[in-house]
Image (cartoon, rainbow over all chains, first blue to last red):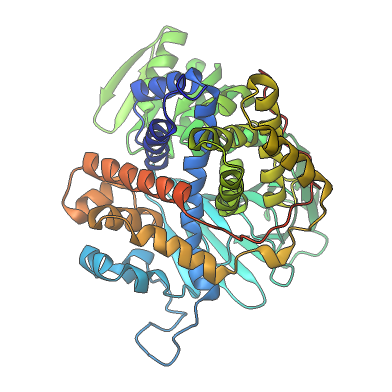
Length: 328
Length: 200
């Protein structure tokens, strides 16, 4: 059997290349087809790809472990005080590439305690391992502040949306604040999206507790597969809880750089896509906006989506600077 | 949708879970397979096949012990290969069965300490060539987007991608060749149901 199969080193070379492209989000359409083709060639390729992607995750743990286990160099005074607010992550390493090349080991074990603020630009989806072993995947145009304290892990979602896979730690609840809405988890995975009037909470694993700060009787338990829209401005009865695992998987497809539509309207899809791009789609005719859609679209390619809608509705597309106009 | 995600790429939760709960133990599984005197190619195939089984899971929430799960999955992969190809040596088969009878708990004391694990990850990254390591660092530790890395280092985005892929390739190879692991396991307890694999 050993001679029939291309040698495993070659498989791993390909797997490394694909995993890197998936990680960087740099797959072109043609490459995506090539990836499908490669995966279909031999089932073992899928195993090799998972291994390569998981090794990247494993390496990310370095940062989390560094913060969790390295002694804190308190007496050196070189490290900034842990609670320097508003400090951006990348500024800490403004020493640049030379410093990185020179002292990777040293940089690697810098403790990441205190408050940390993370932002994403338009169209950027960023995966950030946290010091407690949890992982945050942060969607486009979002901002959040993370404060890891001995008694609790506090995340303030100031803008946008994020999904969290929470490392289990009973003694330190993980609490996400989105406006007046609170979501508490111990070890579980869930997403929170801040909306003008409240927040969407989607649970992918385990159980979370949601409530509205300062509002008695607003506590609800939400289980895996459940989603809830919590709006402080409305009365308690409006805290809708529904269970729809399929819907949640669909709603969180942004983590893979896609949006998935299953009967949603063109208007809905456009509002979603416009979150990810500077170039906005504008629907010139309300009747187009009401059309239901089914399909997968890359969040980074609004033009392709517009073209698909135009084809489906017999309309046409005009591109003008930052605008893609779809009209009859 | 599950079909598409299943084939094209694993779901994010599964990848994250494997990165934290399976990858740390691959070295141990490889060491065990090597002691069975299997040819290197067979070991690689068994490893890839085991990951394939895990890739096909729809959910990992029920798995409490990643290490036990990995060994159990590898065992069922081996048995299937034996049935199909009759290529695994007969001694290995006896070993596999003996393993199932033992009841040594993989237990918490087998877990590498966080410090050891960190040292291992540092070693893996530190062994990369300079340019690779810089790019790896900016991407993995800082989560910097490709474009920004290219700008920072004054290279093209193409180079960033090529170097990142090269770094990953080297680390994958290093993990496959690392010696040892938590060597003194007398066996494992099979308290996890193995991944249900494709039949062929």
